[in-house]
Image (cartoon, rainbow, N blue to C red; front, top):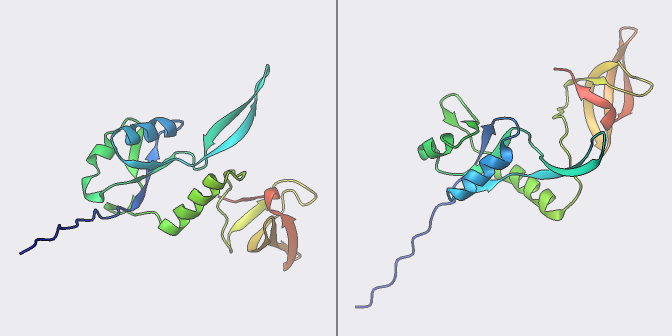
Length: 174
């Protein structure tokens, strides 16, 4: 009788977002890597101006967060890493990050395209125009028409007027 080797596959662990102390993202990612955990810290390049020089620095795309794969039932080793505040979740347990969303972030950073943090805007959210001829006008975000354009609903004379503004000119009202 010939015995076949048994193939044991290790389950693919889900990705979780770790909330970390401000400006500790790189240290936490390094600790995770050193402990053998798969980690992901998406970075972008930013030009910073000081009085005597200009420097290009790598900053986290998601300030205050690092992504990691681990078993959610054994998160204590993760929580003991210096700088880690919590595992992002709801109620009593952590919630995994949607793998499709994280895959898109991986593809963006791997492609070397210019990326930068941007406020999370949803359809129906109240927004304010920050600069330009409509600065200070508030309205409701209707939809994104193209890469850099948004349609905003503005109340004027107790009626709504749709106006198209540049995406980089608006910010969410918190």
